[in-house]
Structures are given as C-alpha cells and as structure tokens.
Length: 172
Ligand SMILES: Cc1cc2nc3c(=O)[nH]c(=O)nc-3n(C[C@H](O)[C@H](O)[C@H](O)COP(=O)(O)O)c2cc1C
Image 1 (tube, rainbow, N blue to C red):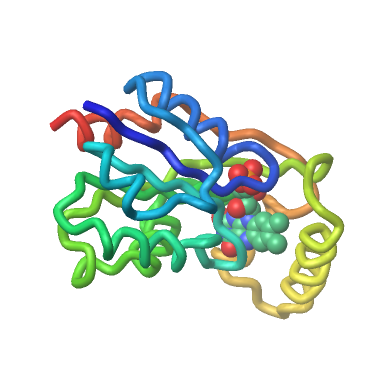
Image 2 (tube, protein in one colour; image 1 turned 180 degrees about the vertical axis):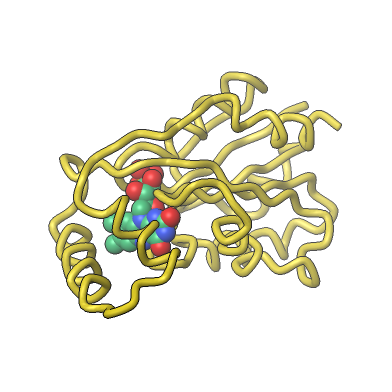
C-alpha cells in the first residue's frame, strides 16, 4: 500500500508520531501545506495529523477541504495534545472531521506533551493568559484541574504503542 502522512507540528510531538507511522507502514511523510488533491490521489492511503490548540485541531479545515476532493480514499486523521487520550480529546478530532461528512474516515487522538523550549513566544503568552484565567476560578472543575496540571512545565507523553489502533485501521 502506497501512503503518505501529512502533519502540522509546532514543537515536534505530532511530527514524531507522523514519522513513526511512516516508518512502520513505509509511507512518505511531509509537513502539510502545499499538497494538491491531484498529487494525493496517487496514494492508496492518506493520513493527516495535527496538534490541538485551544480545543481545535490546527489546519484541520484545510485538510478537510482536500479530503472532500478525494472521495473513496482510505484516510485517517489524528490529533495530538497535552491532554490524556480520552473521549474529550477524541471529540476535538471528531468535531473537526464530523462523521456525517466523512463517514469512512479513521479518527484518532494520541497523547503529546508540552515543550516550552521549542514553543513560539505567542503560544507561550497564550498559555500564560489561559493559566491566569483558570486560576481565577473559585470552584475549579475536574477539567480545569487537569488543564492546570499540564500548563507551566514541559513533559513528553508520546507513546509509539498508542498507534496500534491506527495501524489496524490502515492495514484492515
Ligand atoms: C496555545 C496553545 C494551546 C493549547 N491548547 C491545547 C488544548 O486545548 N488541548 C490540549 O490537549 N493541548 C493543548 N495544547 C498543547 C499542545 O497541543 C501540545 O503541546 C501538543 O503536543 C503540541 O504538538 P506539537 O509538538 O506537534 O506542536 C496547547 C498548546 C498551545 C501552545
């Protein structure tokens, strides 16, 4: 099977997952951006991965438009964020690629991390502002507590084994 993994990554976690996928399946791997539907139609499978920013998948709309021009293509998308892999995290991917519009698409979420050393200044500022806002909550919810836990320190939760369901989907 000839395939390609396209990714958007600011600090490297999504890129790492993209490279793991490409290596395991012998797929090409490239930053998402200039690819055209005509070029992607030459592949049997297309995978798109991006990182989560403020509850949305970065550049997902761009890839969704491309996908609509590739009807019937075996395709999967994955999100990578600082939150753990749970239903809330997966919902971000499902929101960007709704089942009604993309019925046969595989949707996945993999745990990333935080890398303040590689992050741009604007991202750091956004996170500081967000943390300040959350800390003002008088009665923080469980979700607020989870988010505050991952704000402020660098960590790495990437895990190659998390890719198993995506491999099964693509090979199946
Ligand atoms: C401005 C900003 C907002 C973020 N918002 C979220 C979020 O809503 N949910 C989440 O799980 N992670 C969030 N993150 C964390 C990133 O998704 C996480 O660091 C991810 O692993 C980055 O992937 P990358 O290394 O490929 O850029 C945010 C990070 C930044 C910089």
